[in-house]
Image 1 (cartoon, helix red, strand yellow):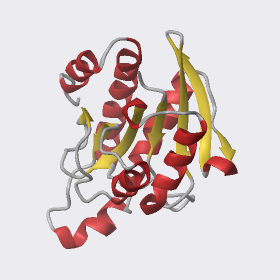
Image 2: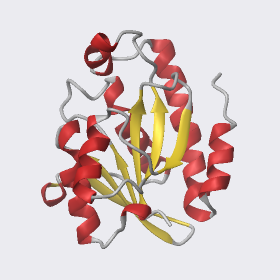
Image 3: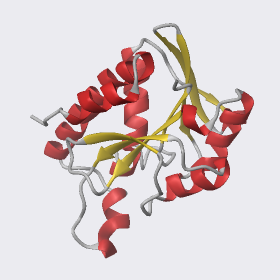
Length: 192
């Protein structure tokens, strides 16, 4: 059962439209689709909200810490509401997937993602769920930082938005049925 959904991002207007903020785009769209709004709560180091899916109460979080300090916000909310790592879904940008592709998985390493690395450190666990939102790769590891901190092209943004829209639809399946059905649904999606 998912009880906390986190969207990873960097704070500030200068980062809001950058690829690294794909996780926040997903959480914001999920809240909007469910007629909820996120409000800044300094004690949780981020914007928070709640929604109910099929009777299940789910907390939402977009941290206002920088990406490499996301764990502080996630751990604070998890501790406050007694949420275990297995009950957390973290949405984040994924270099190893093309724009328009999103994948669900449970557990695993950080794959070099600084936000995941910090969450793993703070939770002391790898067992949380991940929603990996494809942003593509610049083709050169030396260009990764500038790539994730820049805006996607209009076509890439269209593909990313499509994947996020499908991920939101599949979140209802994840939270009301099970992860296998949600994975099957999301992984069958083809970008248009």
